[in-house]
Image (cartoon, one colour):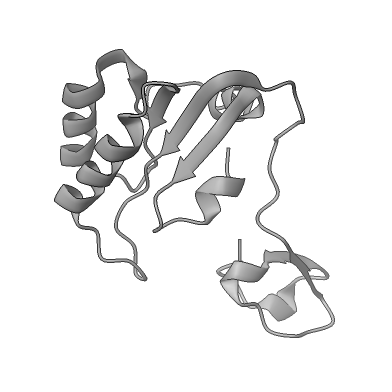
Length: 138
């Protein structure tokens, strides 16, 4: 991610291209944020839904997001697991828990290696449009 301190204070900055970094000699632009993901064998008919939340760039419409999630998760041929992010509103987490029960795991109740471990074996992944960084962040 882009440092909050002046970029000139660093010898080298690795900044994802989606953060639109300036063109400077001490900046190396990456295709997403650095992460812990490792290649693995995919389990057939498995899917993850990564749920973000409001941000400066995205107006969160909880009802619309929940409708979209229900539409995607209604695909009975896929065993869906859902998880939230630090930005997911508590009301969205409560609704997801009510709708999906144990298939929903709050980001606050899982170990830090849970998401990258599960994603490495998951065949499909959907991410809410508010957060491209969720694709890269474990």
